[in-house]
Image (cartoon, rainbow, N blue to C red):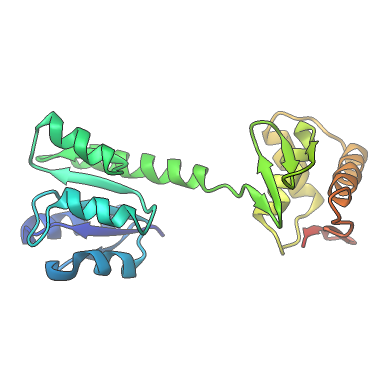
Length: 220
């Protein structure tokens, strides 16, 4: 369940937002003491922040700028201001989206969902041990040497990496490849696993992928 931190000084609006989000499956926490807003937000460790511009003690845009120096948590500005300058300034300080009051609850929920999905996609692991993973290029690099993986090898490696330390069954691997429109039979999967092992061994990780008989594979 994603946690959303609400920074809104109007009690009625704050309550409405919390109820809307709770009823939509989100966990919420509201800022009440605005004298130490920055630390309260950081310590809460939310998945997303709804931040009003007009708040006590500090301007919301300044608060956003300070937050951005400490965390990449997505921020949606919620404000009664309609000035394009405010929107441009908020985005330049690191806001992920901007919505004005009175807002349509459905639109707000869609904006929140879109930002969370985008952040989730961006957080796909791009490093394994000392290896940098280039998803677009399909390569592994240790800063000196680079090895290109085939599309199937990259799909397999990414799934094992996402579940690092957990056993991934052959069926899960086959299903993932099928979902990516890559037909592969059981023998071909074995060959791809073997080739991926060899490529990791070239970087010194000979036993990176272990086989668990009748269970699957595990990336260590």
